[in-house]
Image (cartoon, rainbow, N blue to C red; front, side):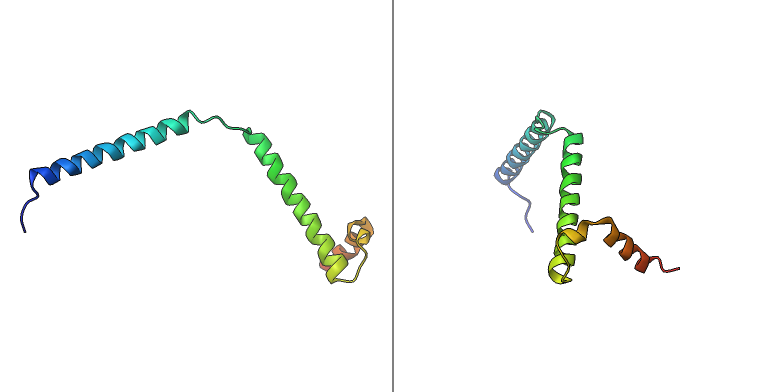
Length: 89
């Protein structure tokens, strides 16, 4: 096996320099990034979306799959009845 020529080594170093410069530019861009929404707002949005999707799942499961009424799925008496089944003592 032959050693790489000086031209190949020069191209390799040139490529390494380009990659390091690109990496440094990426790191600098991350530091200077302006966040559109603060962390607390993102957490609140995710929490609200999870709650809404859980409620939609309850309504679909109870009303459409389980032959109940849409509004009965959200009544406290329905949840008390479900909890009685879960916590049979």
